[in-house]
Image 1 (tube, rainbow over the protein chains, first blue to last red):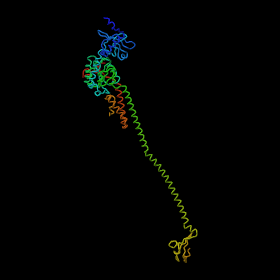
Image 2 (tube, each protein chain N blue to C red; image 1 turned 120 degrees about the vertical axis):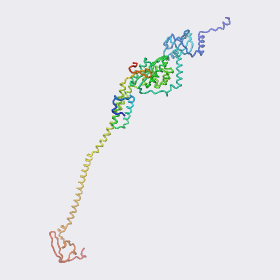
Image 3 (cartoon, rainbow over the protein chains, first blue to last red; image 1 turned 90 degrees about the vertical axis):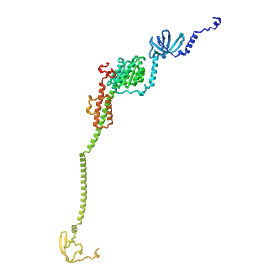
Length: 413
Length: 82
């Protein structure tokens, strides 16, 4: 070391050095957005909510920190010793002089690979049209026979049977058991679907499995299962895992249910509802028939009244009354007429009487008749020596004419 | 249209679905009220019998559970899983 170098030597502060190192690391883009695999240990999860742990493999270890905002999005915390994949970036914790890995998400080991596979297959099948709405079959409303594909020993089967028993025991259930996880599961599921299709007795099939991790459900992401579901002539309802689990089977089936119990509900009508509906219908029947009978009654009474009003007896009675009235009128009229005529007759009679010859005779006049009986009104009807009859009021005298003296015309005034 | 002699509960051989459909048609038919009183009373009786039949099916049914042995055979109820 020469004297010149002594004067050019830089004395770094700790801060300067630390910041320098940090800058180097942060500027290296190859380690700013990466996945790292290892085994987790020394997990600390204090009240702040942040997560601190060490990720290690056989030779080295890496200090990690995950902020609370990312931690709360995890479905669960990893367990000590678990093989995991973490995603994030490298930087430096200045105060501790520590390079750290800042984690934004954690997966179980291998999960990343699995998920990629899932996406690739999903896209492929979607492109082939296997998920299309048009090829989905409708679920029958009144199933006579329901097929169930699930593990014969799992809770899913119990739940499904209980649900169907409660809702619609009229149907029958045919179980086609299968494995639901493990490497042999996909083929087992495919065989179960084929058996039920071959049997051709069930109206609908439920494919079900209880909840589990992504590896547990993996069989339902297999291609052969997807194709078997798509090709099934019998409609298939899927009830796999929990509400938030979506496998490829869920996309390709004819109807997805969030759970096995929900699948059983979608496959069946609800007995309670049906009973209420039937009781309603019974009421409707009663009401309708009551209405009809009531209308008939009204119609009948109307007709009956009309019939009564046409009763011949009534007609006779009313006509009889008419006759009485007419007769009364007639009597009155006759009496009236009679009275008039009588009065008239009296009048005439009086006149007659006053004009009668008797009255004239009473006044002293006489009536002279000739021998032939004719009344002599004029001197010209009398000749000399005629025999005449003179009628007095109180007798007659026979006389003979002695002389005739006609009056002079000019003397008649 | 079923004759009265067929409307004996033990004689009916309809599925729930079929019986329900006829029942609904019967009520609709009564609502349009194009029948003589005799026909209406008949329909009413028919409807009552069907409704009772459906209720009976629902309340008395017991779920039959079978399992598939080979492709063409299914177990009898005695051989089932439970």
